[in-house]
Image: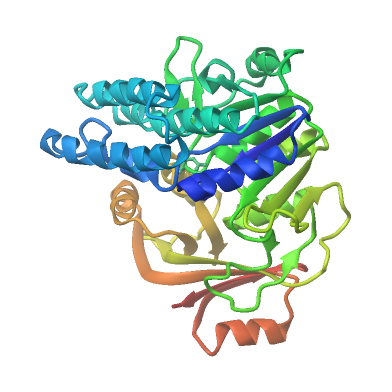
Length: 416
Ligand code: ASP
Ligand code: MG
């Protein structure tokens, strides 16, 4: 069994769906699970339709955007107006409409019950289209397979229950399955999601449960690049990446891979290919049981919108275990992730993603004991396999507010 994952950009138009069908068609006859995200930016549109987010008067126009976007793709793919896809789409769209008309309850719960329609609709379209090109397949509602707890918007996967349920992908008379990424379900029948961009993780969960031969993520880039082409004109494609390196890179914020994706495939020693849906014949990158990255080249990760926070005890006491405990408890309570930290005798510095609301809540929680100072609008640069010359070029004379180095990695917080 192989698992393929197609993200939103690979199915964002009639032409894109045709292209993905060609890629899948090249594997006709092999056992295949095809995991698909919502089309294009559908999830962003659906986020606006979560009950309570926007005034109800705005719903009809927003719903119409979702409907016409998908209809345009369907009409491009299915000239026959009597095709079953039209009926299936209308059915799902009516359910979405009904969901958005519900009174708001808790945001996270409502979110999952609403945004799931992006994936449900995209996979119905893809499944019908593949069938129309001769690729017989079965559409699976993944909410009956990937089981999570009721931690809405960030469901925690129950791997035992999921493994048991994943047997639906192993029927003897079916070779190809089409299913949704990102969404999952609780044992009492509610929809959950796995966090934004979570479809990679869905594919990894299924690869794990099905002991897949390999997993492939089809992307709009040629593979795993050593830097984001947005910031870097001359990127290098990394051909081979060891599992631990991939986990480190995801940890530091490399956007090509969802942070939770690597663990399940590492645990089963499954290779994860990252390939281009534009040039599917080229090799791409592979994450697997390798010793080092190949080619060995510096890797760059840039995170903008960073805030440097300095926390100073008001009573002039040292920053030590008791103080740190108070600070970390507040961070954990607010679910604030620390991207870099450093302490001196009288101050504790931490770099976090900028978020005015959370910053203020943190300040309130710590105000009785600590003074908070912050510096916003910074950039955090992580360089693996650095040299001093590389650092000098990248920093380009900008003041460095905080820096850390290990043998392989340096992190620098600079002004933009
Ligand atoms: N459609 C979801 C999102 O846009 C999940 C994914 O694309 O991986 O976040
Ligand atoms: Mg996506």
